[in-house]
Amino acid sequence: MYLVISQWEALPGQEAQFGKVGRKMGAILRKQPGVVLLETIKVGKRHISVHGYRDEATYHAVVDDPKSAFVKALQSLNVDKVGRWISSERGETMAHEA
Image (cartoon, rainbow, N blue to C red; front, side, top):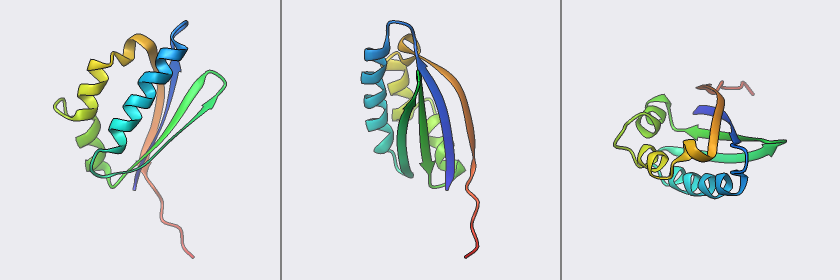
């Protein structure tokens, strides 16, 4: 599985709208083929999302293709007007031996 851990923060005065947009984006992301996990927690003012994809190619198809439903939603919902991306860590999960 390809895992992405992203940190976001609502812009000042946009907390409620950021929450609404985040829920809409999450619903869209969950429907994309190959998305196997999406959970978000709030720590202080930061929203930390954990996304799991079938593999790295699936991740790039979902988040980098300008024609993808996810990218179109980012643009149409004006995420950048209500929130700020802080950082992301990403990579293949490590298999654990029994």
